Image (tube, rainbow, N blue to C red; front, side, top):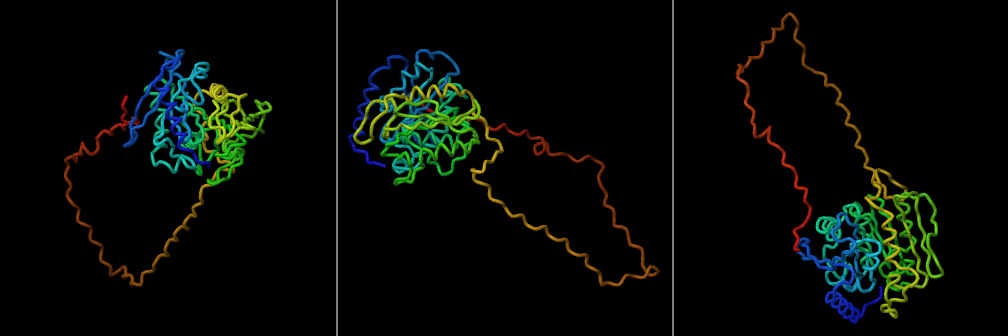
Length: 374
């Protein structure tokens, strides 16, 4: 992975200041906080005017990349106008130290924050706080932020209805989605930071290996089909039915960039595709999938790790009856056995310990929400 200069942090900081000091032109934009363990975490919310006052709204959680933050990411990819068009609440969480503790690479090495818990609890939090539909929470991320999205798909798939990873591949070593969450993976073929063909310093999966994993895990039998393309990119889809899909978009000349975004650090990160808007494509994809993804059940494809076979212990043999060596008494000389003395029992009914036998079981506390600060 390439090194990032201090200039990057300065530029992103100025962008965040600009965004926070100006009001959004087409909706409400505000900050909220939440305690995760001992850490105070923050996120920002954009609500389009068309969704104000409505209940059960769809929402997208957008995770920024390494050495960025919520404000800088929002400025870079400009998703709010597309959220206005498609009707999504946008949620922008902030990483601590501008890096997420997820996947492989510099981001994970730069922080010890419990970002997995933060990402896992955020969907339920925005459902409770911001009138979001429980089955219409989606997640998308760029670079290091895409690794957070991958963790959500692998370990918290019941929380999201769709996922999109941009400029990154699947790099979770133990990925076992319980639900077939629809997935989009977009990757520049000239990416210098997260190589399209995988490998590199952190031994990343390739773009094609990532798609193949989800196809096999979801047990999709259909071959891939090109769904959108031009001379600069091609998006292919694996889909058996309308309940889930796996889409891979190869950007032929792109570097480590978000398709359709502003030009940013082109010399260091490569060019940006202008003919495809990742925001538009991803939001259109999410709108196709409403509700909780199909449950995997007990299906175990050949590509899934097999459970270890535990050898059964052999049943213990019954001991052979032991023959008595003691001589049996002669029937004529044997004295009748004396009956055992009978203990007197009381006719009074035995008292039950009411507290012990009739204690009602307390209902478990179902609230998993951490204490939060508004």
